[in-house]
Amino acid sequence: MARIGFVGLGRMGAHMARNLVKAGHEVVAFDIVPEAVAVVVASGATAAFSSAAAARDADVVITMLPAGEQVRDAWLGQGGLMKAARADALLMDCSTIDVATARDVAAAAGRPFLDAPVSGGVMGAEAGTLTFMVGGSAEAVARARPVLEAMGRTIVHCGEAGAGQVAKLCNNMMLAATMAVTSEAFVMAEKLGLPAQALYDVCSKSTAMSWALNNYCPVPGPVPASPANRDFAPGFTAALMRKDLGLAQQAAKDAGVATPVGALALSLFDRLVEGGAADKDFSAIITLVREGAAS
Ligand code: NAD
Image: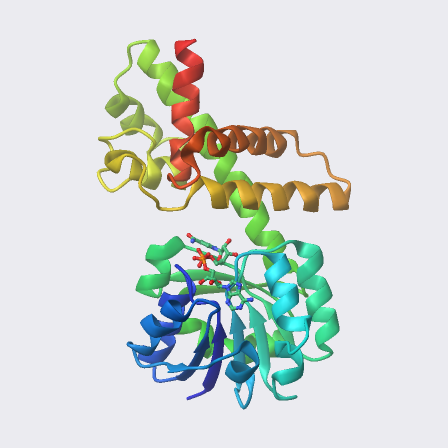
């Protein structure tokens, strides 16, 4: 079993750290919010009083932070993880961040460093069923696999440094656009007199089927567990979706690729978040469509 330094114990990180403890690893945990550390200590982790202290003597160092800025600072800033970690430690960041920062941090590491963002949300983090999209060398991914398997069910090696973030941003751009057009279809069907259940029964089993429709159906009823049945309590928040769509647009621009549907999805989620729905599930995008249909 490994000694694991874990930094960033928020909605995702706390569950991930707890699953590592459950799997028998020794977890040394740090967050800038002391209450967040206390929660995982209650589950068997040891508290560290700085990120460097969490990394010292660890076999594996993991970060799960809000955005690229925090990731760059945590790894490369003064007193950062890169200096504190042992030379032979396996290093990885599981946050969703911009591709350029992921590549910069990996390049600065000068040793195996993985970008390993996740899909599956807070529920997947709690259940230990996350999907990891991993960028880095095949050797480092093989070494990381037993640790990742304690937190997730599916581990996909996507390619070299940054490839995990590219996969994550592509995934969420597809998901956002799918949810937006699915919402349009439900509002359109309603206005044309087609019951939501009938639309669901057809499309969830035909060529329009998708994760957005079949699991997160944006109207209450057809999928009882979907956020639409509980006033769009998340799930995956509109704010996080907007963040990821912004990162996807930046990556597309850097790569010289036109993504007009992705750009439109970003502008829709901008409006949703600025309209006060930042903390609602991203499937609340249907409320924008309804407002448009009413005007
Ligand atoms: P969160 O805001 O709940 O947690 C982030 C934690 O990092 C907080 O506890 C914060 O105090 C801590 N932190 C910030 N700066 C720090 C620093 N310098 N040192 C130590 N700790 C620091 O966010 P989250 O929902 O857990 O998401 C984490 C990452 O995972 C994000 O990049 C997010 O986009 C991604 N993600 C989230 C979800 C989700 O459903 N919440 C799903 C997939 C991916």
